[in-house]
Length: 169
Image (cartoon, rainbow, N blue to C red; front, side, top):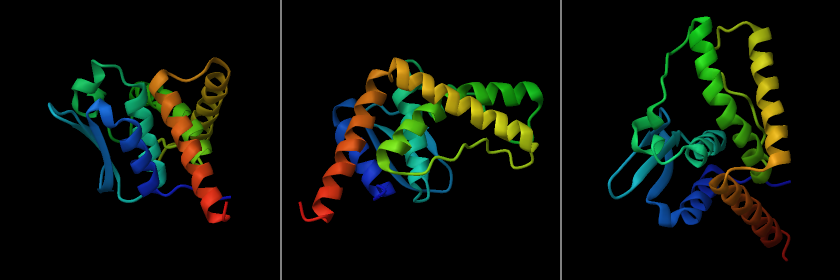
């Protein structure tokens, strides 16, 4: 089964939200959301589909107030983190990564939880991954926020369109 590339994910995002004053592109060493007066910018890491999907998830669930701030105004403490800092990080990331799970499915991509703390004990990493998947199951039942649902549907359409073109349909 075909997986959408990072170029395709960004193109789908840019087309889907062309009227929202935001543009997504890759090739960066670090992901970043930069608000703008004319257009906001979403930068994803290098050329990785997972990073594009992850950054799209953050934007799709961020409210109007959060979208006024660089990286949505979230607190970020680099690893190693204290227990309290890890909990703060995970609370934000569980929401974004649960949406990313559904985006990855739509794009035909493999989801990998990203705790970004390679020194964390395995049981904490596994618990974090479990909480993400549990939240994704909840989101499947209750639905996604409007922008996230719109992007997920657009990813599905693009994947089906390119699959049909590749099969000669």
